[in-house]
Image (spheres, rainbow, N blue to C red):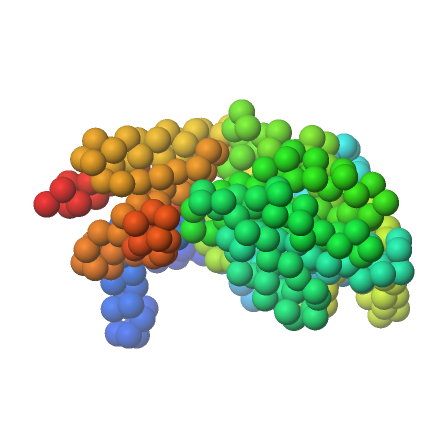
Length: 402
Ligand SMILES: *Cc1c(COP(=O)(O)O)cnc(C)c1O
């Protein structure tokens, strides 16, 4: 009987997909048609438009998961994760990424977050509490003026003192400017941008750490905002750049909907066990636990998707995709050079910025826009994600030439 129901459900699911299908709502169908077309030329924003979750959704509906409410409130890294959650899978996701971000085995704590911003919020909050618990003083936050705005917003939200450090023309924090800005009497909460939003610059952690070394008596916490680049770098030969053991950072945030191609916002947050152990206690009896994370209810479906992708896409394919992205980035740069279009790209970056084309092209390709006198004023950028392939780049270049 169960088997028959399963077959019927599977058949229903398959036929639903095959129909490519009206929702029964004109507004919804029209919106989707437009979006599917737009998606082909969605070049300006760092999301992977080749989500590999079709099988997941088939299973989700066929299994009856769609009528079950699950919630990951609580700590996924404790010994007995709640059964009404997907925390056991969330924990496996964190354990899969622990070595990829260069943490020694069982030395990381982490969660699947709601977004890169949520990961930054945890990184900054954990940093403040860690430093305060160690020193009894509130830290000052140092972040480059080209870092993602979520960091500034979070500092505002958490009511923190922030020093915006000037970056060089390619978007990297200037070590001398950091040195001038440091107040050695207050703990230092560093935020390293790994990629800056518009130019895709990576702060030079070695050079900046050398500056911090000049203040040996001042406590330091390092949070890496690696929302985009933290997705693909672990799968490249530059993996050292995101390795905790090499870079000595304390916490890192990565987005799940960017490189990994989860179809709606989520992310990863990892920090060292030492950081975790130096947080404020919030014993919550009815959740059987010490609630370190900021949110109570947390999404339980996103960790399942992450887990599914680890088992269906996995390391090797992610490594291939990372290589393809790096190749296509170099290809885009080369093609722009060939037609004499002014363009720039940072090392390790998949973001090419260039002289802004006509408004028609900007609109068709959803190019994000920037402005910098040092590069002649009006700029735009393309983020070379998995769906920005060579043939699409060729079409784009042909349109630019016209
Ligand atoms: C995208 C991005 C963010 C914001 O992440 P969300 O997942 O969109 O919240 C933060 N920092 C950097 C460097 C980013 O690329």
